[in-house]
Image 1 (spheres, helix red, strand yellow):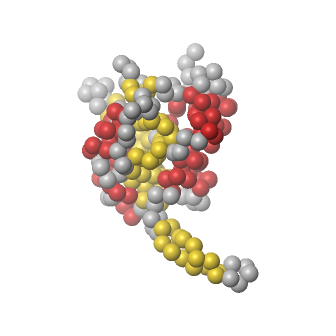
Image 2: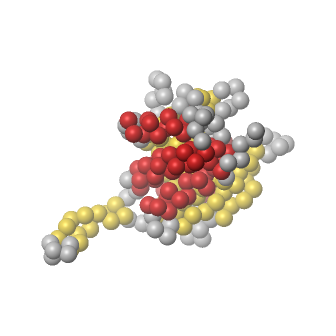
Image 3: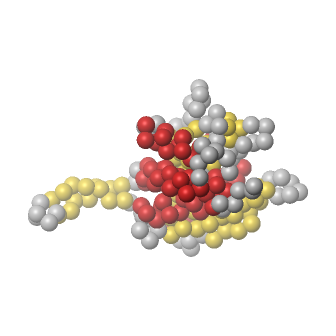
Length: 220
């Protein structure tokens, strides 16, 4: 991450030895696909758990099997997930593992060949998404173009900006600034922030194309 100080809207996982070891595995170009999937899934689980910590809770008292009372908490509201296809679909199971029967929508955004701008090609969202907190799922935040387009789609479907949590494994500072600059009320939850983008707009040091490595479609 260098000297970059992320804005307050960004939550970075604690750089524990365990997390750094997992990130070292999935960043390694020689890691086989099976290991890449397994250890990516572990990091995704950490991210989802952290994102859930930033949703609103209310106090709730329950009675245990011993007959004693326990002053606990209960989540206030409903959530859903929305994955930015294709790579974001890799994060869906991590959300399902934490939230039983969670509703998940999908958004497909690709670069327009004529304008070179992000263009929406497909969106299937829960009908009541406007009433839910939304975890937007995409493993990498590079330039921020696709993320901003996806957030625009969510807002146009009634989701409140402050109810959006963008969850990803790696961010570039350029992408963070672009997203937060346009949508200052959202929260970003990430595992690590990298140095930046190279001349090809790839995150450095990065981990390559997450979707290709996860779904096994790397070219020879």
